[in-house]
Length: 166
Image 1 (tube, rainbow, N blue to C red):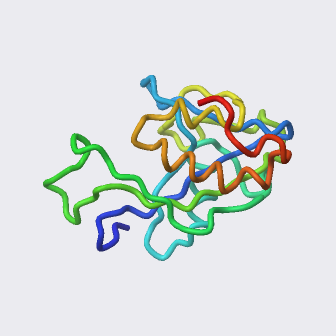
Image 2: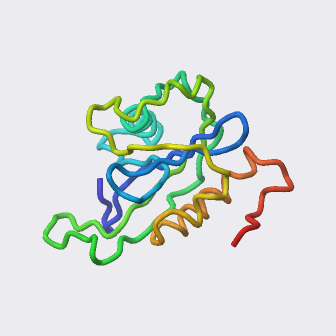
């Protein structure tokens, strides 16, 4: 679903483990790492989209995770001009995302990057909470920083709420 301003509705997923590290995945056949994310379908709530994407992209079911929190509002990023499909209608200029912070309550062996048949990722690892801000593709950095800043108080001890390595 693309809104009147050209932003595609989307969810982002920050999956944490019991140590407070986060799930970081490499796009299939690329040297690009990111959090799982995906579009919201018509008549689908952000939470429903999040659970669908969670299963499609990393093979986890609702009973494998606990929702800790979500961002209060849509966070937006613009696509670089080279990625905009000018011949598509409606024109998509970027994404607006609701971000979910989840805690893995099942064993990590349940992660299955091939659960949907057409994997989006080929590798994954646990990383420190703030690591993705500097490592994601540059046009997503601001959204990652906003999402992590909003969600940090729900998972990190008070002394680690601010980024320290930039």
